[in-house]
Length: 288
Image 1 (cartoon, rainbow, N blue to C red):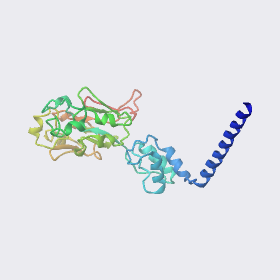
Image 2: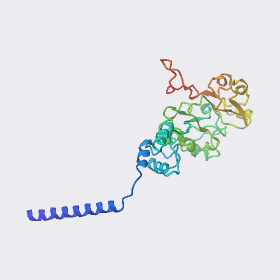
Image 3: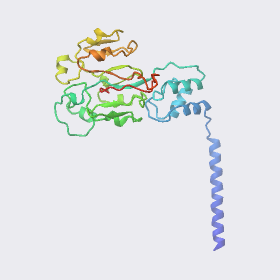
Image 4: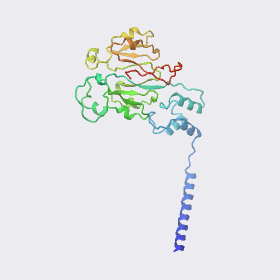
């Protein structure tokens, strides 16, 4: 009996040695050299594999950056700090990248009228396929949270008005929420500079009289913001107020003069307890 056990053990050990030898031989034969820069770049990336850049993984992005088919700014989610780290690894002194965050161009929610009561699948994409959606406003937010569920960084949540609220410090500007929104083709959700001082909470382009009948917080193209802005940074274009972020200083004049309260202070720096104006402390008004 003991002899049988020893023979079986020896046979298994021999098989293990043979298998290990074959694996080692295969590893040497099929070994692929990896550029050490690829591993360095991959380690600099967030590693979230969120797919915001259009690639299946952060390692694939690293390979493309080193291979020259993607720029060092390819990782939107990583922002400027990651882009600069990668630029340094690739031998560049700096990179030109403007960090962005998501912004919602709708203040409707409970302020917007519905044309019918929807009781189907609680999804914006689902309701949008049923006669164009339940909202009377053709550019408003349905409020079922497809963008919230799609965000890989937990940077969105629905408020009590049924509108997505952006947690600015968490938002990486990956753009996944923009692509998920069925209103995306009309930019209900849009990527704006991460220092965007104000945001217009309306995206309707129909006649002001018609949109006012469907939402109490819509832009009515009155041009008060345009006339009062000291920096000429906001203009009514196609019957909707549009902010020029290259000029906007965040003075708040447009917010104060808007009769519809559809312009919000957004991501401008506030002053913290020691008066330093820390950019990490962000102002969120009732509109966001």
